[in-house]
Length: 200
Figure (cartoon, rainbow, N blue to C red):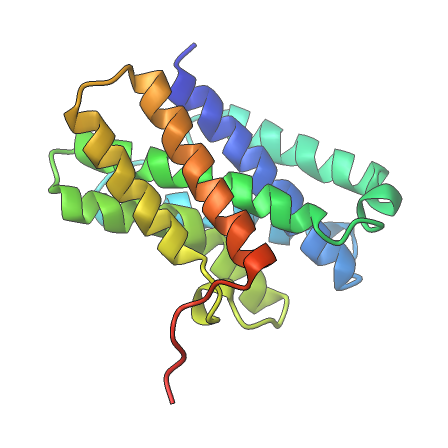
C-alpha cells in the first residue's frame, strides 16, 4: 500500500480525534461532535481538491476515510475521560495532522502539474483549513489568525520538502524528515512561546 495513502488515513484519523475532542470540550452531543470531527478531518483536503480541480474530492470515492473518522470518533468518546485529563492531547493530534496533510497537499498539487509556489499554498490549506472550520464552529479564534506559529510551520515544511526533493533523496526519508520538522516546529513554538510579530 502506498505510504502517502497510509499517511493520509493517519492524518485523517488524527484530525478527527482533534475535532471530536474539541466537540467534547464544548459539551456537544454525539452528533455535534461527529460533525466537528468530519469537518476537521476533511475540510482542508476538500478545499484543496476543489481549488486544484481534482474531481470528485478524495474522500467521496474512498470509504476508508470515513471509516478512519468513525473509528476516531468512537475511540475518542470511549476514552474521553482519559483524554480530557491531558489538555495537550488535542494539540498533539493537531500537530501530527498538519504535518501529514501539508506534505500530502504539496504532493497532490505537484502531481497536477502546478507550480511549486502553488503547491506550498495548497499544502498549507490542506493542513490548516480543517482546523479553521473546527475553531469557527466551536466559537474560537482560529489558530491561523493568532500570533502563534501554526500555518508558518506548514509553509516551512512545504519548502523543506521541495528542497529535499530536488536532491532526489529517498521519498520516504524526505517525507519523514519534513513531517517531523513541522511537528517539532509546532511543539517548540508552543513550549517556547515562538510567535510572529503582532500588528498594532
